[in-house]
Image 1 (cartoon, rainbow, N blue to C red):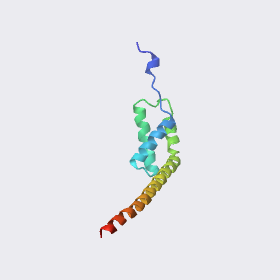
Image 2: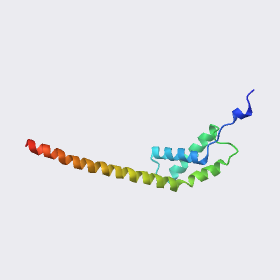
Image 3: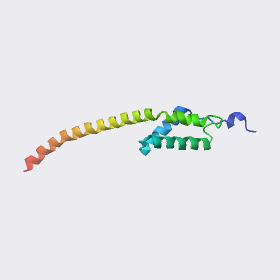
Length: 110
């Protein structure tokens, strides 16, 4: 006989779902609120189907909470993009400085 304790499935929290949705959105390059909302619907429905979200939980309320985090996602994504741009600029500056070293070698050969 299987105990009721062993059959309980841990349900996902809003934070865990947001983290998953945000990661998927970044991977898929989602840049519109409409696509964000569609992704939320898909992710929540998938977890409902898998039994990872309690059927008694208000799934529409959960979706609304996640949809409301669009601004937070955009802010995080923008910050990540700006950091990536700064890193590219730093690499570019280093490469420019190194190019001068190679120019001297080329001038000696002429």
